[in-house]
Length: 145
Image 1 (cartoon, helix red, strand yellow):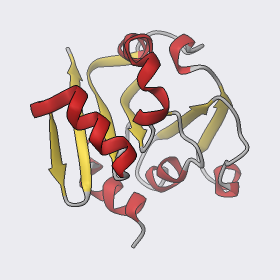
Image 2 (image 1 turned 180 degrees about the vertical axis):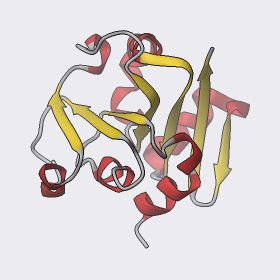
Image 3 (image 1 turned 90 degrees about the vertical axis):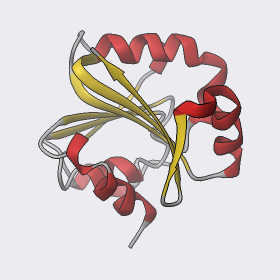
């Protein structure tokens, strides 16, 4: 089983029949895996050079978009995920977090997930006790009321 399939199963209660956004999606492997459970999956990145060809074959919508200036309306998503992306967005985190909170519905959650040392070491430094290990995944979960 692929890591993305495993994390989707672990987060299934926040993915199943929900509208999901993956920020800084890269190849969008998480989005493709989440599509099997989610109502809809949107994923954004600054370019599409690494995009998984499966995106076009599932209920995943990809857009080239800056996560610090999202084009989505307020309260568009139930769950937002950043999977192995924190290293790449860390310098813009405050702006991206603000945008994520804007597009997230009430009682939604933001997941920052890392499996690579590049991400996990920074996540542990920045988030401290808010970061926890679940299987092979370092997770930070933030709720929006």
